[in-house]
Length: 112
Image 1 (tube, rainbow, N blue to C red):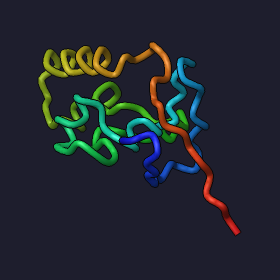
Image 2 (image 1 turned 90 degrees about the horizontal axis):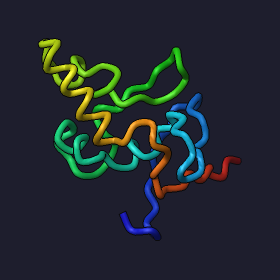
Image 3 (image 1 turned 180 degrees about the vertical axis):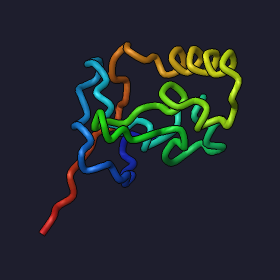
């Protein structure tokens, strides 16, 4: 996505605000709702739009990568050893725990 391009994404009303770049991920979901990561492209079978693996956690009030939290649901696979491998690859691919790297900004629409 070009830096001047505007895209509308719909966030869950309970989603936390996007943290500054480099700060700890808080599950705002903006990155995955704007475009899937390379692994998300495989799962979603698309290069643009929201990632099909993204899941909303009502308990945590945040978005989670389904390949980490619910890999069986996302992939349809049931083999425990394969699901562990999927989690490991997903954690590495999305750099879980290394901080926000989404160069996108959320803008609240003007509401009457």
